[in-house]
Image (cartoon, rainbow, N blue to C red; front, side, top):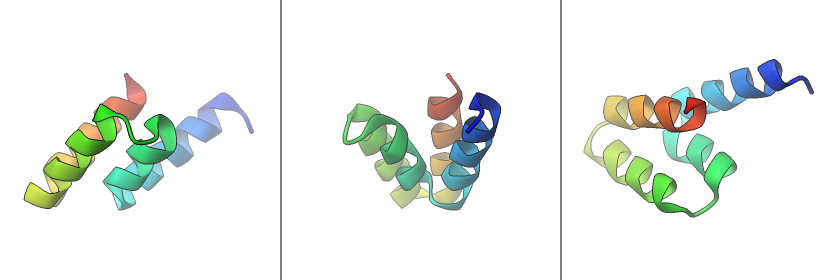
Length: 56
């Protein structure tokens, strides 16, 4: 799979299920826990952080 396509799929998963998208990229690192907490507080902050974490 091309790098651009993989990045698109990662972002799509991050929009649908933010913690899952971050988990697939970083496993159970600090990024996953931050995303999980933000998603529990609100879906939109979880999406924003997930897309940021995946694209940085």
